[in-house]
Image (cartoon, rainbow, N blue to C red; front, side):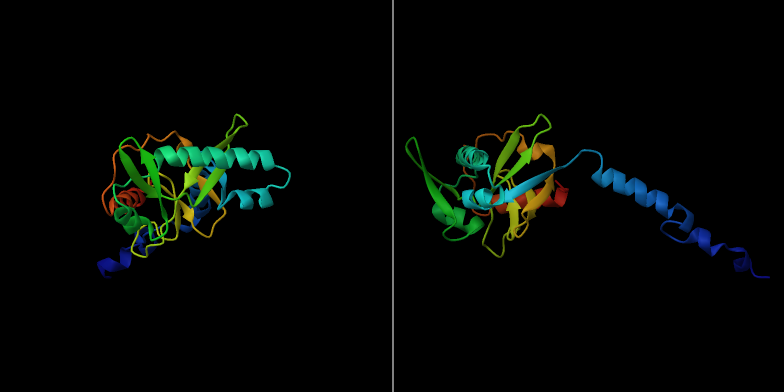
Length: 191
């Protein structure tokens, strides 16, 4: 008899063995979804959308929108030229912000996300989008630090709690392609 007649092919197969699949699937599902590493957030494109989806919660929507605008003003990526901002975010997607001795150009807030903290309060963060097809964040909701939250057609997402961690105030301007490069690097890190 040949030596190959004694080989147990089932034992050599890659992947999970039939008897271990249910346990492995259950463990994987628990690790991905159930450990409290993410929280559900609602995504709104405007104050009006929040008011329509959160009937009877006008005060909450107004407060969340105003908080997102304040944070966007402080933490949005800043550019020294409008052309550099539009290179990353697209034409008509950048606004001017005055500061001592000059102006910054920054992406316009495209929306905001809101989640409930375990302590019961609402947490808010501004979101941005790029209309540039070449941008790594085209068609995505992205935070001011370049973290991709969801696809732009989604109105709910699961994010890590640090998505709401206070961002450093953006004072150093980016160069052309700077934000897209940072976001692409973050997405390739899985974060």
